[in-house]
Length: 68
Image 1 (cartoon, rainbow, N blue to C red):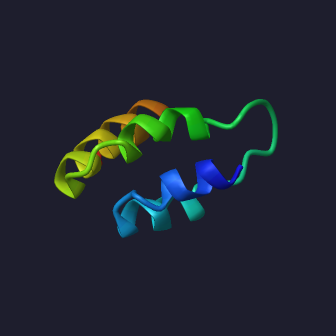
Image 2 (cartoon, rainbow, N blue to C red):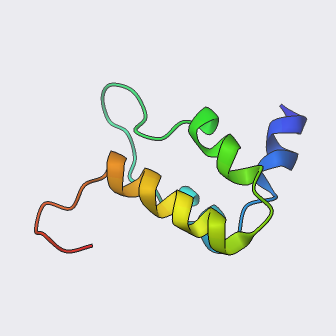
């Protein structure tokens, strides 16, 4: 568990914040799991992380009003 926490600390601060404020899962499985985020944390460049995060977020939480 400590390894997981340390790995996620490599994420850009704004991605960490976005994860903290993801909508609460009230039924079923979480839309984004730690294993989904781990490959993003392995990327050292925060700009690349942000692009990967945006792709993952948009796949799991598609906009219903046509905006991003």
